[in-house]
Image 1 (spheres, one colour):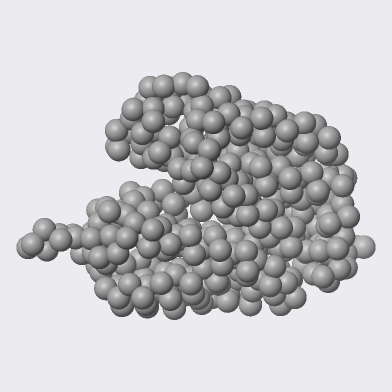
Image 2 (cartoon, helix red, strand yellow; image 1 turned 90 degrees about the vertical axis):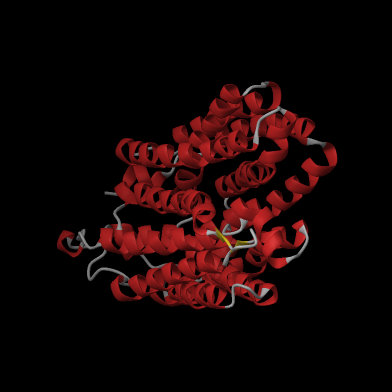
Length: 407
């Protein structure tokens, strides 16, 4: 293969930017009601469970749409695959704003948005593979992951500021939902204007190799020893994060923290995830290593779990939350996503990433139910045991050959 056929284009950063924007927007639409659950109950005159349903819908629909979305992304590319997600975000985000006062229609809009989610978040490694050389891919996936955190933090901060009270003291959510609807349309338009499927020349030699179909790729992934270990690690790690972030208010209440302190403890995981996603994937790319960073992620989050389980007080819990976010979200998610794409090559990247997210969604639901039945502190103690299993699994995986050998 002629070396001149390999070329790296600066436009890759534009593609990553518009993908990251729509990635942030879908997270914003997912957790719109989380920081104002009490006000939403008052606005719609429904139970707490029916407000929680607006977020739970995303987890349930993901289990149904995950693999079809991955297949379409691989079969038709990111412009069409992610474009479906972007179109759904723009359409249903706007409709949710227009019909904000109608709870039933908001449910319909949430379902439409939830269908769009896997078309977006399953494509991070595919975007990285199409546009970035192997030496930059963990960084690219880390930036896409960073965008998700920014979307979540943004909605947590902005939503309470965007709702308003009428003369009777009743909160009004319509203005806030319309604002997010406009943002969703803008994000979708930016995606379609600036997205490109792939550059004229591939970013490295591996990209030139023939890829296998999604169904065959799925079978190959299931046979891969290292991928099996990573799936188990995600089942445990991502499931624990989903459960802890969902139940953080109950955990902090037991520890005697105020509502404001609870919000900061929960937000600290995401802030730490942003810090970690900026630093650790870049180090992984520069050192051309994946396994050591996955080991660090699994081992590093364990003291944070111990802190949440055994420590009391605002500062110790804040530190524990930071540790979990920095290692689990900053290193574990983006680097493990890219590692799985490399060790299962030439299987489709969107399929391997979708499988990891699928595992984390299932365990998240199971762990949330378990925490509410067993209790917060006993569940955290069990999570510490799960974390030790993840450390062992991370030691058993092999280093990615692709990151070491590909130029």
